Length: 138
Image 1 (tube, rainbow, N blue to C red):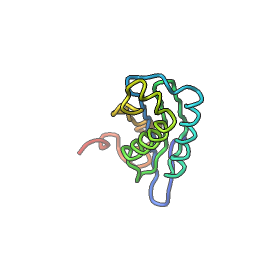
Image 2 (cartoon, rainbow, N blue to C red; image 1 turned 60 degrees about the vertical axis):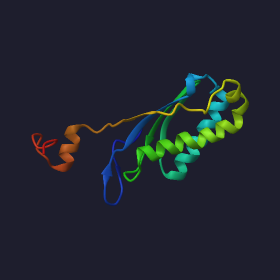
Image 3 (cartoon, rainbow, N blue to C red; image 1 turned 180 degrees about the horizontal axis):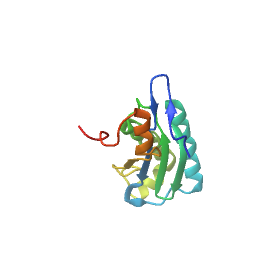
Image 4 (tube, rainbow, N blue to C red; image 1 turned 135 degrees about the vertical axis):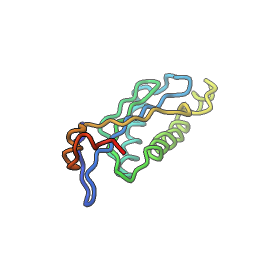
């Protein structure tokens, strides 16, 4: 589980995302051997870009990733990097299987991305020094 709030010189933040990737036609080819290779690959990508993968689970035809990102990260860019790079990697390793099943690629074109936060509204209000009536109003 990640730390509730992270700090840099100029910002205190919590930027956690939950990503779900699904294989095309939910084809079950992410067996334990392939899954381990994908996990290793994703961890390398996260390390390269400074993201922290605090939980990743690969289940035969889909994957859940819980990541801690930096404030200047784009969830879309991180998602594309995590989907596209392993897709190339998986396609190289499993091209015969994908061809046999007539799959145009590894992942469905869409994904799920949602925030996964722990800080409460009261904690944020306290940090900002706001009255409860003013938070969220324009």
